[in-house]
Amino acid sequence: TVAANALWVFDDSSFGATPPIRETGGFVAWPNSGFVPAQLVPSSWSVMLEGADFRQSTVRMSTGNTSVAVEIVHRGSGSGVPWPTLVWQPRSIDGSATSDRSYRVVIDGVVVAGSTRTLSYDVTVLPSAAVDTAGDSFRPFVNRSFQDFIGRPAEPQELDYWAAQLASGVSRFRFVERLSSSDVWTASVVDQLYLNTLGRPADAAGRAYWTRELQRGVPVAAVAAAFYGSPEYVALQGSTFEPWVADLYRVLLARDVDIAGQTYWAGMAQQRGSGLVAYRLYQSEESRRARVIDLYQTFLGRAPDPDGLAYWAGVLVSGDDLRLAADLASSAEYFARS
Image (cartoon, rainbow, N blue to C red):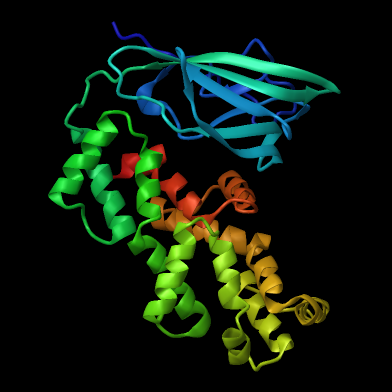
C-alpha cells in the first residue's frame, strides 16, 4: 500500500462562485498545509486570500527551532489570479531528509476589511522514497545547467560536487543562482548588449566593468539603459532624440513610434537625459514580456502560458532578469526536462 496526498482542485476555472477552500483560515496555500512529497516542493510558495492587503505583510518560516530564510518576490493582485496573492521563496528546504520534515509558516500583517490578521499553517515534506547520497538523480540537471549557463557540460569534479550538494539539501535555486552570476553568463549578457546597441563586440575593459556591475547586483535593466541611452547609441541613430526614440520603439516595443510618443520621449530625454528614457522604455510592459518569452524559450523550450507571462512580466517591474533566469532554471519543469 502506498500512502498519498492530493491537492485541492478548483472545479470552476472562472471563479464565478466562491470555490471551496481547503485551509481553515479561508486562504489558499501552495504548497498546501499537510503532506507534500519532497519532489513536488516548489521554489516559490504562496498564499491567496480574498480581499487581503499584503503590502505590509511579513513571512516567517521555521522547522523545529531553526528559522528558514525567505524572500518575498510578489505581493498584490492581477497576474491572472482571482484574489490578492503573496509569493515568497524559502532558501533552505531540505528535500533529502530520510524522515518527515515539518515547516511552520506564519504570515503577519495581513489586512482584511480594515482588520489585521495573522495566517499560519504547517507543511510536512515527505522524504524521497530512496536517499540519493551520490546525487545520481541530480547529474543530468547539473550538466544541463552548466550547458545553458556556462556553454559546456560540467567537468567531472564539478558534476560530482554539485550533484552531492543537491542531494544533501542545497536548493536547485541556490545552485543555478551561482551559475547565473558566473563570469560566463553575465559576460554573455554584456556581449549581447554591445551587439544589440552599438553593433560591435565588447572591448575587454568594457566587458569587465559591466560584468562586475551585474555581479554586484546592478539590475540588467539599469545596465541595458546605460547602453541604449549612451551617447554612442544616440549618435548611431542620427545624434538627435527623435530618430533615437523611434529606434527604441522598434527594438524594445516591437512597433513604430507614434507622433505623440516620439514628441513626449524626445522632450523627456532633452530635459532629464537619455538614460532615464531608455530605462523607462526598456522596462515597458512590451519589453518585459518580450524578455520573459525569450527566457522561457532559452530554459524551458516553450512560450509561457498567458498567466505565467503576465506574472513574470510583473515581477520584472522591480525584479531582475538574472533572477528570473535562475527561477526558471530551478523550476520542476526544467529539472524534469534535464
